[in-house]
Length: 388
Ligand SMILES: C[S@@+](CC[C@H](N)C(=O)[O-])C[C@H]1O[C@@H](n2cnc3c(N)ncnc32)[C@H](O)[C@@H]1O
Image 1 (tube, protein in one colour):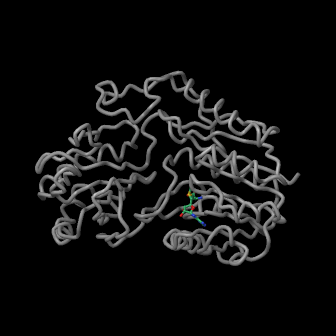
Image 2 (cartoon, rainbow, N blue to C red; image 1 turned 180 degrees about the vertical axis):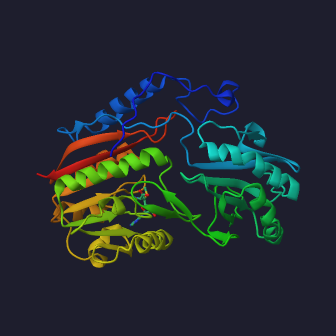
């Protein structure tokens, strides 16, 4: 059932913002109802030329704070006094461990993580001198409160230390299911590197968002706001059911959030995703639910070439690409595809508008804003389109 939380005219009070320590939330202090109204007007105006017949459903909102299931924090400060937050002017660490955007399970864990780093003597990396090891701490919280904790390190020099101190960390944070080291050797403002060393037996965090348990690996993508993501999958499910399809494709499927929402008796669902780890996760969920081809098929590959890997042409296609939008190859194929319903979920209204303008044989009938990112002007928008 789709939930649509009423928007109250309250606003979040942030001590870091008020003190000028962090200005990441560009809408902080603005009443939440006004934020949603402004986002709604902006996205409707951006899509109007390409989707003139769109009927806008009421915006879906969730909590105004405590909604981010992932914290990406820069490690700063000095040995014994690590800061977890951002770097201020001059490269000094600014501690934001109480940031109110993060889910409560993350806020509760951060003091333990800072203590752990200080106690074992892990030295924060200093950008000016390129000295130290710990660059970032990345924490993801599942709706169950379980955690995935990643330490982004400059090198593997402290791998043995981290392995030997893992029991201490797990004793302090027994809700940590996955702990890993990510190795990011470049002296550049890149959050993570290519190499991941998982220290725990479990390599995935079970995130029950929507109808199925989804498995997130350390380097995988997951929607940042679990409450609003569940509503997004539910909306897609309603649009799919209304189309009553035999075959559904979920392109750019990640760990399968839309695909699992599409599953129904007598229906064939296929997901395509370029990241092999995400497909392994989607298959893990399929196995747990006892779903096998042709009811549900996941394939590693380029979304533009889904027809090479998925059986049977689709009646409904779901696309949820990265910010860059759809690849030109796929745009051309979608215009020629036999599908009759297209669901496009996007975190970037500019590329969504561009792509809808290029899809000349489709007409958007409904659209909906999903406010995954309160206190900023970012948002997700989903539309459903039908053949002209
Ligand atoms: C915005 S995420 C959507 C994930 C998923 N739909 C969800 O709800 O979690 C975009 C996904 O597209 C994948 N991707 C990027 N380029 C791709 C391509 N050319 N073909 C297939 N998947 C791609 C990324 O790895 C990422 O998982």
